[in-house]
Length: 202
Image 1 (spheres, rainbow, N blue to C red):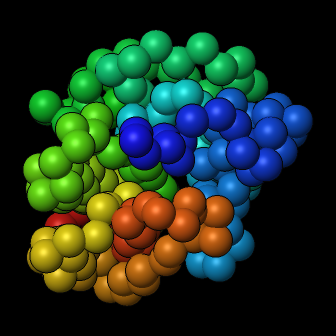
Image 2: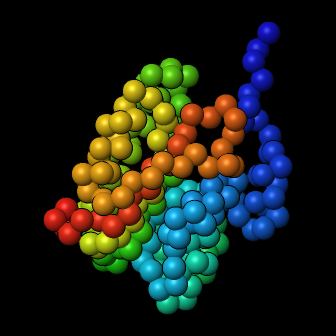
């Protein structure tokens, strides 16, 4: 007997997100993180790494307001409609920092909801998640202003403490959040770094 795919079909959170104009349920995770750590404020500059399908960028654009700016980048096409304070880029920000990203730097907040394309091999997926997380942290330190914040997704594994150290080496405060909207079978957590050290910011 085949195991039921827990991701098949929209759940109540997905339907609620779509009813509010967001393409994915992940918006509620960022909403919770924002509420708990007071992440997003009017006038900020935000970089959203791996932004497709666009829920985080849309939410961030509403929080930073017309005087703020959101740069959303993904290797996938982002079809979500955004207000004028969002710039959408197509490309891989993790190979090297895209020059188009630098045009709006430094950023007050760097977001990464990136996850690897799952292979079915748990250890391989966890290792790839760690690699994505670390590279996103490096980008955040490179284009974030001193005092900026970072949010990144990670699949829980034996690399968790190493991932946490990557943040604590650069940010003065690190928090770990398992968002309420996370599906019960998911191993994902979010690590939040606050107050990027001036010595690590580029």
